[in-house]
Length: 201
Picture 1 (cartoon, rainbow, N blue to C red):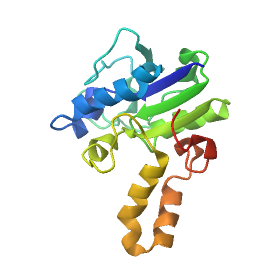
Picture 2 (picture 1 turned 135 degrees about the horizontal axis):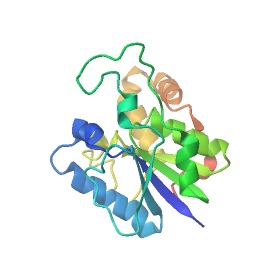
Picture 3 (picture 1 turned 90 degrees about the vertical axis):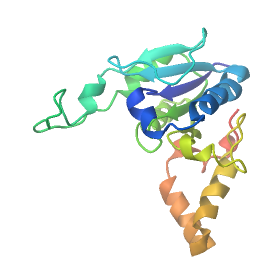
């Protein structure tokens, strides 16, 4: 079985927004324990005009590239001036997945959980690839890892994540918290409505 952990866009511009203290050390340990040691191929997706940042790259890891440059995402030019009639471009999910080759099981992480990460995972699901997002390993990581009652270096649990998120909202009542959670995590990419994904393989 070909298992892949795809981590989207670990570049300085994204990671610097969140990193603090020993966060990158914990992030690297998680990639090692959750994925490399469980025989996943670890793949990092980068923009062709950006370098890997904050990640300890290992000999068996791979890097793939988007079909657009990072500058094509930005509403300002290299001089800091606003681009006229700017329409942001998204990387092609098809282009990224084609570079992975044959995949039986795909876990997606990176930046950002409710945007590019979700889009890539949804596309993979539409292509018939058994796929899920590890929400611990998205931009949410930099808040979640500090919660020692919740965060486990070696595994991600959908049940534990849902309990944590609903617990943060249950001051408004269990029914309300459940509705808000379901609204925020409606996509099948998150796996909460799919029995086969109660735990990452």
